[in-house]
Structures are given as structure tokens and as C-alpha cells.
Image (cartoon, rainbow, N blue to C red):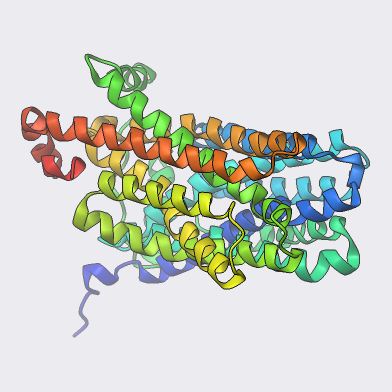
Length: 447
């Protein structure tokens, strides 16, 4: 007598396949994102393409601007062509764009390559998150997404070793040729990555979705309801009704400072550490430790937020990040500096994630996607500004102020998310009924 599989195990084979393929795609995403910062000290030392510190900051911002465009366009494009095709297109785009960087004969061509790579990088991550959310076993979506995000930091670690082992003997262009290798992964995605079940249902391809779900013994999700454009704009307007605009602005400002810090440090950490007198090998080791900290932080922050509240953890994490980043401007013994970089990675990379958790928990279900999406989108402008700011400070021979400027950004995000959480706690009694209806307790957002 056969028995049906337990609900928690349903679809485990399909989930493993999807998460594994998406993890590798995000690994390549992280490699391409971090490779510029890892190779930048070589490029500045060799005066590659005649690049200056100010131009280097601009080039870093080109990639993050491309990511802004890619992230904003990802949802609309995925709804039209499907998540699988979009993921494949993004991997192909940032791989080919890295090839353009590798053969670039001028700063302008190199900048075009980094911008196009950014579009691919920005479109891939939200699409991959959507894919693994679709196929995650019931009750395990959060830990599945957390596992996926470790791939981005693993890519950052890989970028440091590419710079350390390949660039020194072969030159800076070799690093970007390495970033073309993910193009070989495109046929693998085309052959083995299944299409999103939700997308198939939304397109009316119900039989295809049933066949795919049956092949892997996965649960078929409910067909998504169509949402008119007027409803989407109404959800955006709801973020500004009454005094909600204050809360919305605070979240946006916190996200702006958080992503300024994340991408500013990611771009300039090796170069700034060299300006502080550390050898190149040590400076690249800092990239490894920073991303190892990011992996640990992603696994720790969620559990801490479940216990103490996401707003509180985000504010504390940003405060600790600001302290850690500021300490990097002080020349300390190497072992102590390694420890500070690791801990800074733990707190920095997950502090921003907890802003999204805070917004998600504090929003009504109908408005949640809009609130989180716009908070992330506004933060992307900080991602563009951070690399540019670091370049301007170095160009003005004010590298010592780089870490201080980034520390101020972390402190500002702590203030904004802290004020937002206090306002939420004050408003909790009158919004309690609504929160209970969503399955969240009112104090959670304000703890």
C-alpha cells in the first residue's frame, strides 16, 4: 500500500533543482558585481585605460545604475516572457558585457560594458528570488531565500581569489574574461531550469503547469489574480496617505544610506585599505572576510529579528556597522583589522535586508509588494551614489575620509530606521486590528 509524501517533503526534488541552479546563477552575479572592486587597485596602479580615481568612482556607479534599471524592469519583463527566459537573458547579458570590458580600449567602452553588466545583474537577483520562492517547500521560503543570498557573497569571495591568482600574472583584463565563463552556464539553465509555476498559471498554461508539478510531485500554487494598473498605482498612493508619507520617507532614506554603504564599501574596500598602507594581498583578503561575514550575517540576522524585532535589529546592526567602518580608517594590527572587517561584513550586509523585513512586516498584505519594491528602488539611488562618492574622495586625495563618509551613511540609516520603528510602535495600538488580520502582531514592527 503506497502512501503519499508528507506535505513538507512535497516538491523537494524540484526545489533542490531550482535552488541549485539559481544559487549558481547568483554566484556568477556576485562574481561579476564584486570583480570590479577587487581588480580596481591593479587598474589604478597600472593607470589602465588612463583611468583616474574620479573616473573609477563613476565607473562603479555605472554598474549600480544599470542594476537600478534592471531591477525596476525585471518584474514587468518577467511577466511578459517568463522568469526562466529572463534569468537566462540576464546571465547572458552580464557575461557578454564582461567580455566587452575585457576588450575595451577606452574608458567609455569599459563604462558601457559595466552599465550593461549592471542591467543583467540587477534583473537576475529579484528574478532568482521569485523562482526559489515559487518552488520552496512549504514553510521553508525564508531559509531558502537566505541560502540563495549566500551565493552572492560567495561570488564576492571568488572575485578576490580571481584578482589574487589571475590578475597578477595575466593582467586586469583576464579577470573580466573569467566573468565571461558563466556564458557556458546558459545552455544548462535552458535545459534543466523549469519555468515558474505561477507564471505558467498566470499565462493560462494550466496543463503545462500540472504536468511539471506532477513530474516532480510538487504542489501547484493557486493561480494569481490579475491586478489592474489602477490598483497598482493606488497601492503606491497608499504609501503617502495621511501621515504615512513620513514613515515611507524614513524607510526610503534608511534604504538609501544602507545601499550607499553596501555598494560604496564593496567597490572601494580593497583600494581604501591599500591607501591605509596595507599590502594588496591583505587588501584582497579583506574582501574575502567581508563576504564571509555577509554569509554569517544573513543566517544570524533573520533569527535575531524573529526574536527581537526586525526594526530593532536593523538599527543596532547599522550602528555596529558604522563603528566598524569608522575603525577601518585607523591603522590597527593586521589580525585585529581582519576581525573588524569580518564583523563589519556580518552586520552591514544583513542590516539592509532587515529594512526590507521591517517594511514587509509593517505593511498591509495588499500593499506589501509595492512598499518593499519602492523601498528597494529608492535605495538603489544610494547604490549609485556610494561608488561615485568614494571615487571623488580619492581623487581629492581624501581617502582617509572615505571610511568616515561611509560610517556617517550607516549612522544615518540607524537614525532613520530607529525613528520609523518608534513611530510604528506608537501607532501600533490603533493599527492593531489590521495587523492581527494579516497574521502579524502589532508590536512586532516596533520592537
